Image 1 (cartoon, rainbow, N blue to C red):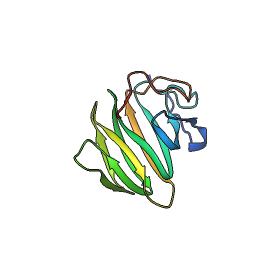
Image 2 (cartoon, rainbow, N blue to C red):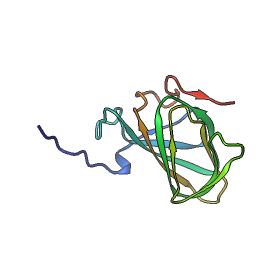
Image 3 (cartoon, rainbow, N blue to C red):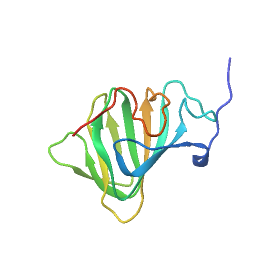
Image 4 (cartoon, rainbow, N blue to C red):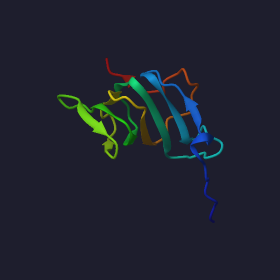
Length: 135
């Protein structure tokens, strides 16, 4: 049996705020929480970080891929020092890999994030279950 694809645009996404994010927000495009593209095994989110914005280093069981679509900054990936991140870079984050971003540029940073499995639906003020912010 075949099914039809869900064809959506960014404006069809669900905006969310993340506990570990300062001066930024996410838009869940493909996610169990989005009735226009209700996935089962993955999610696709766009993360926006304004200049000076930070997604604090954290880790979780979910596997992720980050793709920097716009902007530049620093990435914290469990290495000795942060690394420069810029448009066109891809990062594969295995389960429990430390990761975080800082927008050190003058324009909005836009990051595509694919996550598997998807985090469960949650109100925008609540971090996903099992996610720990690294202090």
